Every structure is written in structure tokens, then in C-alpha cells.
Amino acid sequence: MTDQSDTRFRALIAARLAELERGDALGAQGQQVVTLDQQATGRLSRMDALQVQAMSKAAQARRDGEVRRLRAALMRLDAGEYGYCLDCGEEIPHKRLDLDPATPRCISCASG
Image (cartoon, rainbow, N blue to C red; front, side, top):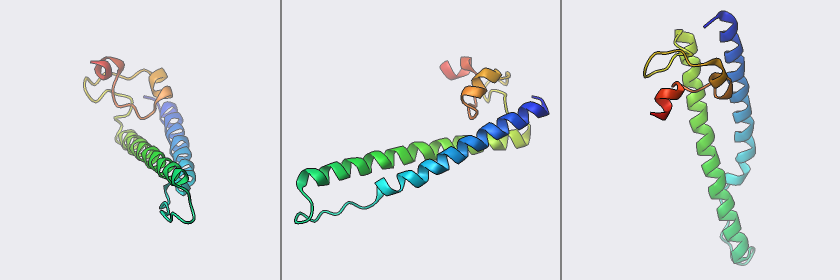
């Protein structure tokens, strides 16, 4: 991988991390504790609030997983191992890395 490619993929990873951080800030409101005061809120409204809270927590878990994958990709970049499949060692096509810069495996190993 060339220095120009390194720089491009590092910028792509940084942009994705920033996007995930913005998602964290927006999702924090949906994860707040749901009040179960039956006098203030109806039963269906509480059920809706609990469902929104559960969906927000699941979205947060997905974002956390993606952040871990992106940080691992940055560590591979720093080590000079980025762009090579963790299983077979072959170079991962740049088109695949453009779609998912955190991917650690080539198509063959990922599908096999």
C-alpha cells in the first residue's frame, strides 16, 4: 500500500469515526431511563418509550462494534499491515476497502 493510499484510508476511517461519534450524541437521549409513573404517562406511551429505549441501546451497541473495528483498522495502518487479509495475507482490493475501510478479510476468506 502506498503512502497516498494510507493517507486516503486514514482520512476515510477518521471521517467514519466522527460520524459514529455524532450518532452517539444523538442516540444518548433515546437511552434515558423510562419513567414508569402510571399517573403521568399512559400504558401505551410507556411501552413505546421502552421500545425506543431498546432500539436506541441496540443501535449504540452496533456503533460501539463499528468503532472497535475502525480502531483496529487504524492499528493495522500504524503497523503497516492494513489492506492485507488477516487469514490468507493477500491484498484486499481497494474497492472493498472503500466500501468498508475496517474490513480485515478479503472476499474469499470472508465468504468461506
